[in-house]
Length: 293
Image (cartoon, rainbow, N blue to C red; front, side, top):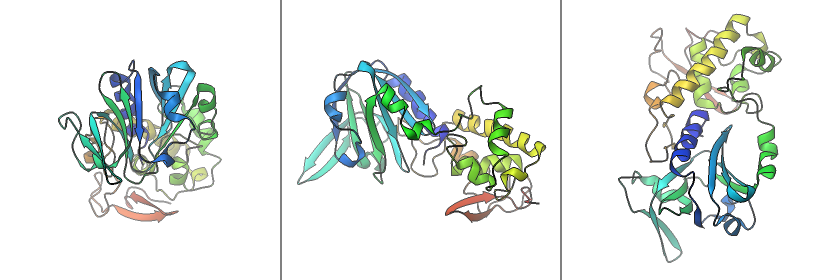
């Protein structure tokens, strides 16, 4: 699932590419993706005012006091380009018209939602597993959705200070990796960056959060800021389906410290990176650098 660096990269791209454009039409072939009635009728003719991120959600502010929330879920990502929708015998094909602008790879085959823009460009949502969703409502309705209201603080915000971090982590009796991935504690961190953050801070993923020392908490707080900022600068990680709005992979993929490095040498000590299971998810760590005791 795209995490904070990937979603923020998409948001930054969209602010450059689609803000100021008017939505002239909408096409979709997977109605379950659309979570709002009268979706097409309400959104046609609306101007795109700005694009923001909250947690792993993309928020597209529109004229007329409307707000469009898009959550890419596990395999979704947004693309900007030009396609032709071709339907034959109940089968729909989405064909790229300008491969030089949008990488003509398998992801074009999984486009299920297209917003046509007044400059001839299109904003598309590609999703292999069809779990992504789009919700349209008033700004007040969307901003007050429980899934947004319950999110924890944004870790890269200047207002997110060490004292707030301590108050969130110290009472927790869960394993620290579980806490870092809990969106109600801190928004935007998932499996990829929790692994690398814990490696950077030299903390075992199974260590209980309330057992962390003051020194460890400081290292962890610093690692959260450092790893997320670095990944954002490199435009995210593409070990799975994530692509940016031009269909390109994120460069952090080649700079991962622990995530999916099982069997490889630890970049710090040379010992072998191990993988363990935690609540149905994998955790990658160095047993030498990240000791639980």
